[in-house]
Image 1 (tube, rainbow, N blue to C red):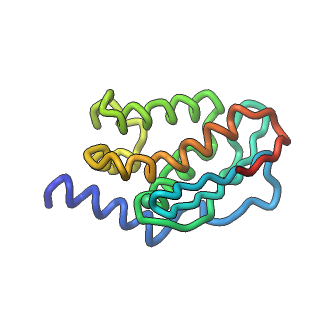
Image 2: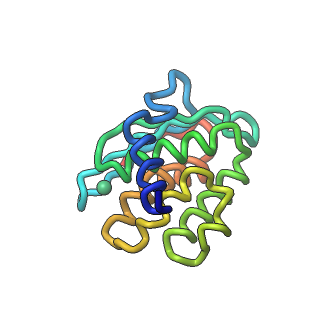
Length: 148
Ligand code: ZN
């Protein structure tokens, strides 16, 4: 199996069996982002406790890349500190921009499988959607609610 095929498997697995899917009963931030070019929607709900991302869930619909990315991001960032989650967002963006190699972005776990997306600029927005929603939530004070 080639690396591309392996990555494809990881993406499909997250798409078919999304981790952290749904909506939190108690959240400190809800944020919805759309990618009209592709028809993707990611609804993120997140609860922080102190400086920690206590819980994350995502809902929405769209292409396999947008939904798999939301699953990977949620699973990865749940339980991390706010600072760690922000760092992971920055690392993912750098991977998408080609500023970091897959090895340099190993802290992203399964999300490294999305590295191939950077060759298709139209799809980078799909992959970034959930991470941008996370950044929006993390830059807000607790108990702020927002949708766009
Ligand atoms: Zn998409």
